[in-house]
Structures are given as structure tokens and as C-alpha cells.
Amino acid sequence: MTKKRKIIIGVAIVAVVFLAVLFLNPINLYMISVRRFIHKTETTLRKPEVYMPIGEALVIYCQSYPLLQSLFAREEGECDRDIRLSGAWLPKAANAFDSDARIRIGEQNAFAGFGGGFFGYGYKVSLTPKLSTTATNVWQLFRFSSSTYSDHHLATLHMDATRQFTPDEMLSNVVAHCEAHIQREPDNEHIWIGKVKAYLLFNRITEARETCRAMLDVIPEESEQAWWPMLTVALITAEEESFERAEQMMTQWAEKDGHFSRYLNLACFYQLSGKPDKAAEAIRLATGHSEKTGITHWTRYFAAAMYAYTSREYDSAVLLFDHLLTVISDKAPLYHPVLLKSRAAILEAQQHPDEAKPLEQGEGLSDYAPYRNFDIERLLQRPVPRPTKR
Image (tube, rainbow, N blue to C red):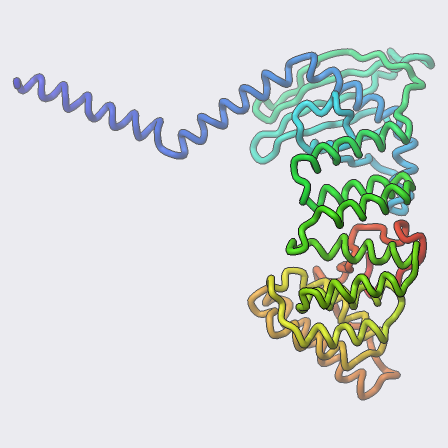
């Protein structure tokens, strides 16, 4: 083989290796796949059959703003800003990406964003007051993408000024989305709870309670979230049948696979039923058992200890804090000093009960409760004792 030929072969080998390193390394392969995804997505975004249903839905939600404002004012206490919704609120025909869009609704504009990270995309609509009349509103629909950093006009939409979503249409959109998701993931407790919340938002108490019962039938007992449907259905049973029947349900459930968290949920049942003495006894039973699945909801148990403290069940509160302190170092060491300080406050309160001070819960604990961000009072149609903020 000649020297010249060897040089050519050597150069070719180097070139092949260089190209392989350039194009076949994991980072470049990932970037290629991302670019392909972006190109495919942006091609989809440009299709009228995709953007028109979404644009029309956003416009109708804007025109339904007063109803949305009244719903969420009742939910949050006040609502004088844009309404934020999930993709579940989009009608089925408009949910083109089968994902949870980030939706923001105002009186004269709306936004529906998809994707995330370095690549966000979606649609915007805005009212054109100068072209609108008392009978017809004129809206402009735009597409946006973080890959182009610009908005592209897609269509001018003319909408009957009286067209709004009715409460039944809004609820139907959310429920249909939740049910489709449940078909794919029947043991996803977050979707079930989202469906319950939707019914509660529209004051459909019967449907909300039926959904809780259906959730209890589906969520596996060994799931870390099995406590939620069990406790909730027991509380509903106490309202619809009797406290004794509900107590029997919770007690049998706790004893069946007796461990720490189940007895703590029994204590929560008594707490939310206004039975502090029974809650204290359940706490004492809990501290006599180990936690089989690991204490993953220990801040909720902190709320149980607080309830015992505010109910002056100091012995039970100390037992629970001692139990939490045995596992807290590995789970959340930053809260270890908070628990020590709280335990000391309880011991002080035992000596001087008339001078007992509120416990300092610490950042991240002050707003935690068994039903954080869930309107349990609306579900049960009665006030519920809460040792912490909702």
C-alpha cells in the first residue's frame, strides 16, 4: 500500500470518527430528537383543525369571565385578576395535544400554553374593541413559540357577543377530561381528586361524594394515597348514615393492617369529627406501631400533634413528637429543631396549662392540614375543626 493511500485511509478514518463523535454522542442525539419534536409540534400548531377549536374555546371562556370570576371568588375568597385553569377545562375537540395546558383567562385576552422547559408554545387571543359591535365581538388569534420568539397571526374570529359557556358545559369539559385520564390511569389519585374538586366547584355535592366512593373502590389499599378515599368516605358516611358506622369503618381499616400511618388517619377522622379525646387515644395507639411504607406524610402527622396540643391532650402530643423525632433526621433534617422546640413547648404547657402558647410550626408546616387545598367543609356541608390553616 502506497504512502499516499495510507494517508487517505487515515484521513477517512479520522473523519468517520469525528462525524460519529459529532452526531452520535448522547447530547447531539438528544438535540436532534428535540429539534425534530419542535418541528413536528410547530407543524401541528399551524393546522386550522388544531388552532380553531382552541381559539374559539378561549374566546368563549373570555366572554364567560363573569361566571368564572364568581366561581373562583367563591373558591378563593376573592378574584379580581386573570383566572388560571388547567387543560381539563378545554372542550374535547380543543384538547389537541392531550396534555394539561396552562390557561389564563381575562376579560379581553386569554393564553393557552403547552410544553415547558426550553420550549414553550401555544395560542393567544385578544379582543379588538374597535371592530366589535354590541352583537358581535371580534377577536384575534395568535400562535407563539419560544423557538421563534414572536407571535404569528392565525385568524380573526367573530363571536356572538352573548355566547358563553354554561356551568354545565364547563363542568362537562372537566369531568370528561378526568374520566378519559382515569381510563388510562385508574389508580391516579390526583385525577380522582381533581374530579371531586370540579364537582364541588359547581356545588354538585352528590356527584362529588359518589366520586369519592368510586375512588375508594379503585385505589389499591397498599397505595400511599389510599388514606385519602378511606378517610373521606368515612367522613361522608358519618354525615349520611351515622358516626358509629363511620367509626367502625375506620377502626377496622386501621386494625386490618395496623401500622403507624393508619392509626394516625384514624386520629384524623376523630379530629375532623370533633372528638379530641378519641383522637388522642388513636395517637397513642399509632405510636405503638411502626410505619411499614416509610413516613412520607410526616407533616400531616405534625398537624395531628398540633391538634392534640390545642386540645390539651399533652401526653399524646409528646408521644407523637417523640415518634416523629425518631425518623425525622433522615426524612427532613431541617425540621428537626422545629420538632424539638415544639416538644419543649408542650412539656412547658403541661406544667403551666393556662400559659400555653401556640406552637411555632416553621416554614412549610404552617399551612399543612389533612385536606390542604381541598374544601372538605363543602363536601361534608358542615364546619370542620382545623388546627392549621387550609
